[in-house]
Length: 212
Image: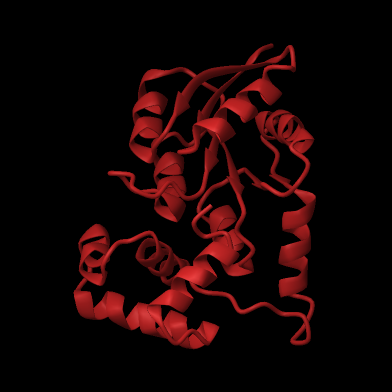
């Protein structure tokens, strides 16, 4: 049996490298590559496949990305395997990716040899969480001494979108919420993280992998 895979990443070098890696395996075949969330949704609607392997953050997309994209894929195609590649280190966001419907979660710092294994595991209707991601999630529940500050899914999305260049007004329109609500979520996230300025928001987003 050949497993059909859709790839989505806004960095062509990354998606090409992942394609080459997967197609070294005789039972894996990349049937389409998307450069944005919109392209991914269009391809998924038009192209028969078994698995989607997608980046978490694809800034500049006209459609939703991040957690809303994963949730949308799950709602539209309940039986589609979804594997997320990310550099995110915030346990709250990682857990949210799993909670909204991802079947596989792989940190880009992991050995990419895990990806082919993850595809096969997810195809068998099982979940695959990479070693580095399991360690991050374990540290978050180990106790106060090692716990990492976790944002709520919406706070993380607001910070990510703001750091990617969108204004509070843009984000409010994106989520169909009031500017006041989004501004409050931004301030609450900053307070949790100890951030004092917009520059610090951008630095945090880069360092935690929210923009990767």
